[in-house]
Image 1: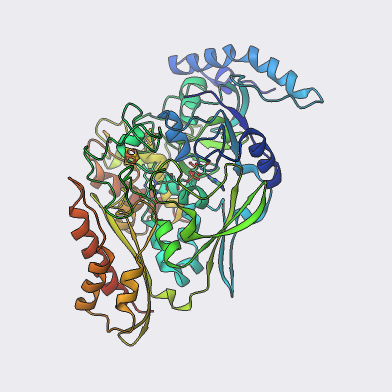
Image 2 (image 1 turned 60 degrees about the horizontal axis):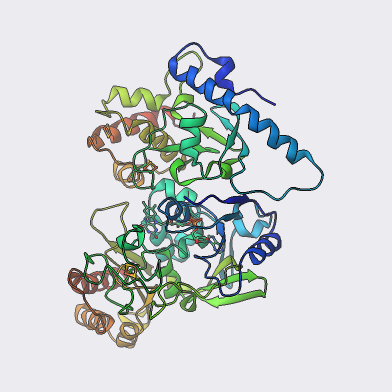
Length: 340
Length: 206
Ligand SMILES: Cc1cc2nc3c(=O)[nH]c(=O)nc-3n(C[C@H](O)[C@H](O)[C@H](O)COP(=O)(O)OP(=O)(O)OC[C@H]3O[C@@H](n4cnc5c(N)ncnc54)[C@H](O)[C@@H]3O)c2cc1C
Ligand code: SF4
Ligand code: FES
Ligand code: FES
């Protein structure tokens, strides 16, 4: 691991000031000399592997702003401070009641220990688990731009079938992000160029020709909060996660679903898909195909076909298309049958 | 400055003797960096400069002079000499390194030790009471034969204590789900679940 200087900025403006002193406008946050650390469950892992090489770590855990650690429920929705831990949000009574899809997505992620450590902002920024990205002896365009992609012809069973490019097909593995994109969440950030709000759907970048650019954030920007608008019918929502083992594993396919129903007819559907795409993935075509329809097995299957119409399988991951469809169909029917 | 507890409080076990040696060896750079920190102009932190980190481990104060890259796990094992906490994968995937930090179960392999300044750490060495009576969770693991090789056991026990405290041991299914972060290569899982049920009932309301 590269040696690093460790600093504990006292507040957000101090953290931004140090970060902007040691980074440039062109730096990607994941490639900059100075990087933020929260729970460390993703960054420390990648530093040990030599994938992330900051020489300065700015620990966000001592920032004094108390809003960073709070979950606030109001008539406008719910606001999660960036440093709230996954476990706290998963166990929060109002989160469970108003947004089951959020609570499920967190409860089914990682492990009890990791959920105690990991922050919500760190969670949404977690980097891919692509095996060739993790092991530095392989070619990887995301880790070393222009070096090639070992996954294309390699063992790409866990890789993405949606949102990939010829440069990179790494899956975005987070679960929480699927609930957030389905519910039109907004991310609040503060950097040297001021504070701004980023629609969740604009936070992550598809790989295209530049897979090393992962998000819209600048290297000196700190996520301060994640806001989810009030969606009264989100009580009828859930997160279904399918994986190689029952627990403590990333999704092979998952679905975040929220339904506004009039009897069995869909007024509005929100659908996001995990484990199958390069970024958090809103399935707009599937949502539209359900609008105004009676939700039954047939319409659910049509929605699932629409969701995967553009899918591009590689040698070992074609199974994800069928698995992803079945996951979505089951999630839609289970959501319909919820008592909400 | 507090003495590393391993020096003062222990008998002659090899493990504890080694702990004392390591801590004493760390004392010289420790004094130097303390003096620097006391100067009025806040010195720029430098690369490769050891950082003095104060931890309370099992209710004893420790001051360790550490490279910033040291994980909490390595600080416990190699610097404090507390080798009860085990290293399995060193990447967050097995749970062997589980300890309690401020009462919450975490993975010590994914935490840099310097981030834990001022925190209360509980390791398996700190569970028995001073008269040697085992913690109910330790006793339950013995009663139910909840291990074979024992390598995962310290992590299982600390994780189980955390799990019960979180209120996530309500049913056997709950226990399986919320203990999934602790892998047991010997697959003692059914016995581990039984042990946790017993200890949960014994410690309820305690
Ligand atoms: C074995 C294992 C299994 C896992 N399983 C799952 C799973 O099933 N589902 C799932 O969703 N996740 C899973 N994870 C991933 C885990 O949830 C993430 O590692 C964790 O959420 C990251 O949060 P953190 O606070 O530890 O982030 P850190 O590691 O501290 O940071 C991650 C990144 O975010 C940046 N960052 C952190 N906070 C901020 C901020 N406020 N502003 C700007 N940048 C910031 C850091 O600079 C870094 O680049 C698993 C992890 C492990 C190790
Ligand atoms: S899929 Fe992306 S992350 Fe994986 S090796 Fe290819 S370029 Fe790297
Ligand atoms: S050693 Fe920490 S989880 Fe395996
Ligand atoms: S007892 Fe051997 S690994 Fe669990």
